[in-house]
Length: 160
Ligand SMILES: [Zn+2]
Image (tube, rainbow, N blue to C red; front, top):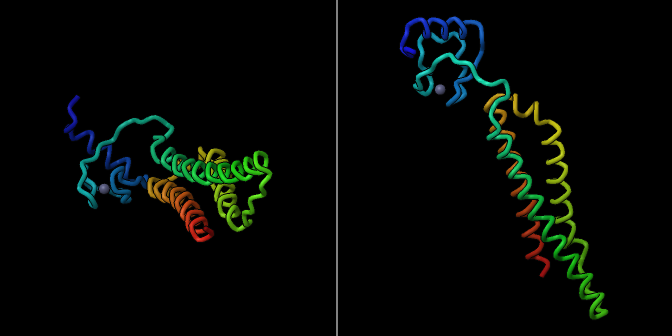
């Protein structure tokens, strides 16, 4: 099929005359486009049919970020609680750990865990959001995971 067929460009212009679609590359609004090129980033554009569900990429990026946050905080928490119990059972030594030591890990794991539940519940809304909102949401997921993990590391290192 001839991609340079002027009929394709006419159909693209007709579609964008009353549809506010973002550029798939840079997110710039293409409404009222006059030629088959994004005025912002210069990418050539064409009208085509795509599947109804948008791609999973950014949704999974957010999910991976939150899972790393949960894994990091959760595993260290289990390790510390496990060793406290281990010493107590084996040697009868009561290792004293301040609540302050465990609190950031518990909070971090709880925050990332609840965010994962929310992320899974809202997957339809997240995946149908605009490209910039999906990028923002995925970045927020990583920010939550990293900030809770870093807060835990800081508190852990201060308490020894
Ligand atoms: Zn563009």
